[in-house]
Length: 363
Image (cartoon, rainbow, N blue to C red; front, side, top):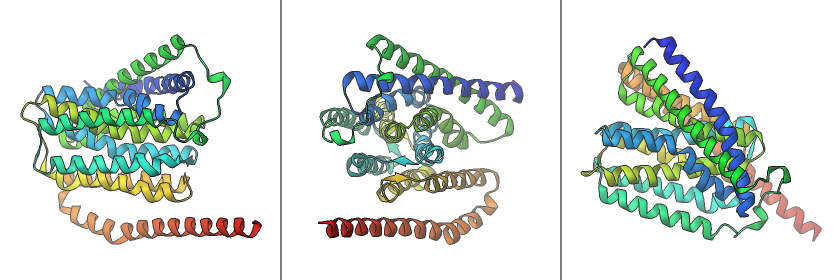
């Protein structure tokens, strides 16, 4: 198959993904209005489960074929991509206002799950017992989300009457959007893997980058469409919910059905899983600073993913300069990033202090 033909597969997949993203966001908003559930809960459950379907399909297929590396690297790479690229690019479209429940509960929960998965995999194998535990945690989390949906009615979105739909129409939009998202993702991944193979890129890099990015296209398109339409809660909730379900559902199912457990590459344990945890941890100071993910912060997230891709490519294409690359990142860029986050937190605290003083003087 020629490189041009692979490129056409990728372009066709992207076109289907955009159409599917439009339908899926419309269906999820209509469903939220019908069930009188806050849209952020829909984003954390229904939308995130639907847009995680490509990751589920690819990882399960890889598990049944005995390719544990693709099964695990797809999830880890997708989670890194979701935080750095999906959130970053969505914030570049429009600054995203963060719901307080994300800061208080959902992101800390995601951080705890990510650390637990890292710990479970640290022995070199994600056992079937660990997979069952993740599935049990999935059920507990969904029940928790649904039971606490009405805790903060002040955070609910204003209802747009034009977004209402009958149950059959809402279900049809969700189903059609999901079909387009899954088919589009498969076309994109097929074309990307074919093109990468022709270019001589290793399967490990494909799993962590091209396959992960390809299966994360539904999250990217859905969040971009939601951000453009002013549905920031769907855009952010989709990312957080997808990352939770990628680990709880996909790794849980793959681990439980693997028999002897999923083998985890030592390099992934020492590098990619910690990066996944750190990217989740980086969300907390960004989310705290004024409750808005700014365009500057979105650009920084996307830039960090470019650095991650750079290390992936150097590791397998030019390992002789990898140490120098890491040194530059550690010495030059990491201190700048920490200084930026510190400045953001201090600015937010000063703003809060000024607001408190203003309210006190008025009283």
